[in-house]
Length: 154
Image: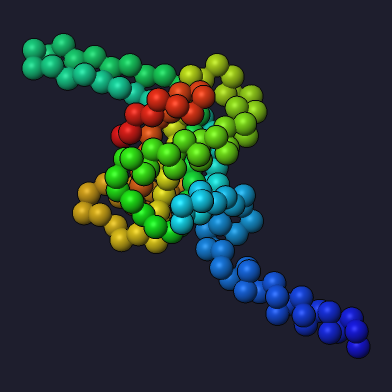
């Protein structure tokens, strides 16, 4: 009888907590940004950054180099201002930088790309991107240096 009561009590207390977590985050590492936004880590791994300059005289140039990628799904209050997004990107980068740099292929990378997907936000007319699971979502991304500073948004 006591075992039955504990089982029922466990499910009564545990199910609301499981229901609050979005389906994309189940079983993944969660985090809280402390400003009304929270999320989960979708993945870390290698990526590449390409920067180019187009010129009218046909002498276009481009540079490409390896970087690390931290992909997260974020929920809560969305803010378009870079003054709000930049601290969020830095905090996310600091949270998962060690996990990223522990990957063997990340040795020597100088930049870390933080990609924030906002699955609950309405899609913009332009700028929606595919998340790692194939869904489309509003996306913010920035390249930060290895110490999670000096961000360049794209």
